[in-house]
Picture 1 (cartoon, rainbow, N blue to C red):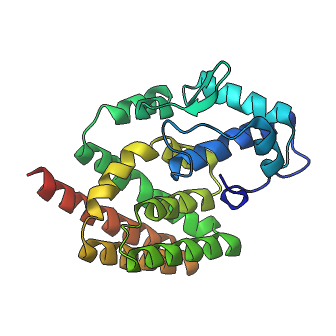
Picture 2: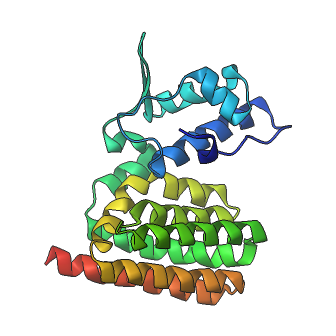
Length: 236
């Protein structure tokens, strides 16, 4: 895990907020593929140094994620990301999504993500827009080199959720990331579909930059509607 993969925890926050922030950062790393299932976490000392927090805060965050079933500590060995993707989810929402098929997951996305895009258009900052542009440019570069850009596609959607300023919405997307990624993986299997994904991301980003909630809603709805169409063809 590199220093560039995380941001420092802001100063002046309470101990509980620091713990939660660290836990959220670790979930982000798992969701975006920086930490994968079965990976061993860096040492507490290293995490504390990278995040700019105390080792005690890191330890508390790890303990919290262990209780949630995201991580598992092995005595004398270290802390690992659990292998079973279902363990990355917790609570009724995660279990409900895990037990459904891809078509139902896409129906869920079509209900949720256009609303997220609409809210993001109302609240998005210049910094958020710059991060989205950077992520989209990275996706284009990966695709140009022959990659699928799936992980960067996921990060783009997570950044939109974060731009809403609503932490609950963001947490929902982070926690169901592994399930939703299945719909992205088969969508991005061909060059034509990858080009389409970049084009529609550009349209979503343009609507966000105009701070147009209705256009952002429509562009995201069209984006997921097309993914659903591909999924239905694939299922048939």
